[in-house]
Image (cartoon, rainbow, N blue to C red; front, top):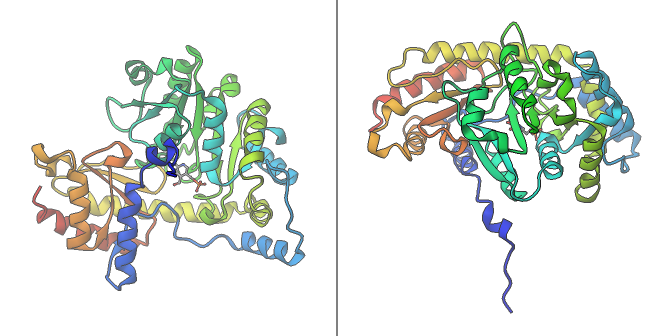
Length: 394
Ligand SMILES: Cc1ncc(COP(=O)(O)O)c(C=O)c1O
């Protein structure tokens, strides 16, 4: 008898970015002095009040199931937090707590799209978006900006996004750190009003914005569209809680209920200890602001160090902890297609500098540098990068 896995086993390839970062980790473990700029997570410890709340939950010992969508008091806390933050008032029934923002996204896409539906994804994108759309038998519709890293209504029109069922909007962005300002969001909202598209706004980096204006959510600009917006966020990045797996979805009750039914039958509630710890996180704003200040300084250090380096170009990222560097001028025109992979491998081998190639994010010829590293490491990393680019054959 022969057995055969289903189509999804073939459809989802290995994560190419994980390969390079695990190679870098193996080199570090072997004692090599690698500076790892591949990190997609803060290097800070989780705030102490969160740890204390988790310890108290463990001491209590009653760690049973909770409601799938989350502890009622956690949903109420989240609702209050986002109501206070401005924009439409959020009720507890408009909140779901899932296993990281990743599961919120998956749940949302799963209940919003039918097989064959198009999902408009601005380029460059976080690698998980196309993978989830594929897993759900949707069709990826790439929307490439005409200039810079942000899309406009004209870009959506050109890409045919009017035919999409869902648009994913990620601000601040992984991998570019680009942040949509209020005017840009208002223009996108106007475009959304002319069609029926749902918008998944991935705001997982919402607290890591370095402009005076800070973060704005599409739903704050366009409350009239709230029935079509699913806001995706969580504690992972802002609160240094990636491993706790606390993601948050905010949407109309009908959407949240559908997402909850899917969660009922897939994973149930997230870890009860993590939920009790999460309750304490919302009072940790001082810690969040201190981490944001540190990321802001690190961004400035990296940008100052790299400014003027021959052969590379970049926009200063307004948010998240990534700098996307355009290296296309360094690549031989006939070898551009895999140029960023060769460059990333060159940097790792020659300079012991781990970076992520832009191609898997839809930005071939670019490198993503994470600045979730200490300032001294970033200074050293920039020196290594500059030196090593000189010996790159192109
Ligand atoms: C843009 C974006 N969205 C969502 C996530 C997932 O966050 P979580 O760890 O909460 O699942 C990440 C993590 O890298 C991300 O970069």
